[in-house]
Length: 144
Picture 1 (spheres, one colour):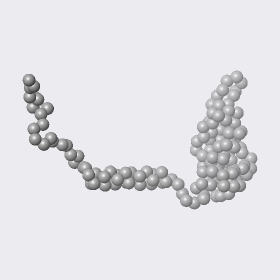
Picture 2 (picture 1 turned 90 degrees about the vertical axis):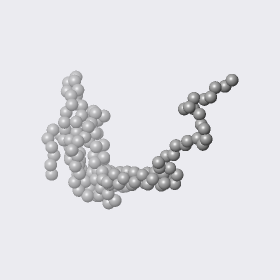
Picture 3 (picture 1 turned 180 degrees about the vertical axis):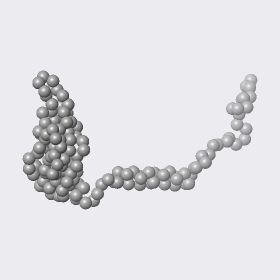
């Protein structure tokens, strides 16, 4: 003979269903709205520092090109850490000044040294740069 189900397991009448407080079409609209706002904020943040002018891309290109040219002057280019770089000029010619820390062999030991550099560059194509003069790397900051 079967025993009746315990009260918490019995379902007399219509079973109770839980409804989300934000369900149906309203929930879809809210989710899409939140996603749209999030995407808009992300777009603004990602493009905050960019400029549509060629000067911003020219300056960034000059900074990157000079890192490459300065590394060619170092004893241990793979250890180079650049800081304080600033570019002056306008497309197609820029002069970049900054500092670089890198390992330098002193006898049989390797030591970190700070060097300063001056790097004049010229843009000769969309993404092609060449030195516009000697790339100087030394112990004292270079100033124009």
